[in-house]
Image (tube, rainbow, N blue to C red):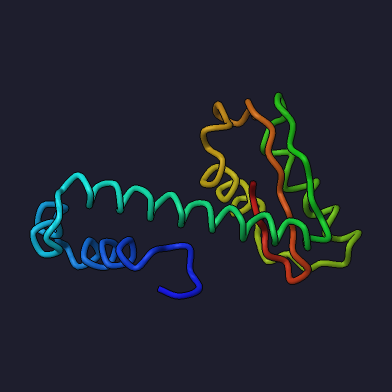
Length: 134
């Protein structure tokens, strides 16, 4: 697995899991222990999560619009702020208000209680109108 964040063993375990094999079956196939397969799979998923966060950060650094959403804020106020910032930056956004709210809830649901923000997060808007929530 050249040029990825996964070792060959991690990639192989994920490939076999995607084919429906259990950890025990993979361990037998690769002549190792189930515990080793468990560790390989966990580390592979952690590496993938870190790679996704790295890509999000890279996109955020290039995003012409970044909004901070603070604790106590109602998420229903965010779409208006985002669309206003997009207009100022001359960025066309293809998300509707309900789609913006749904994306926020899907990405940072644990930072919300109902419509109220509990923990701060940011929303970036790329030059092509894609919305990133971090």
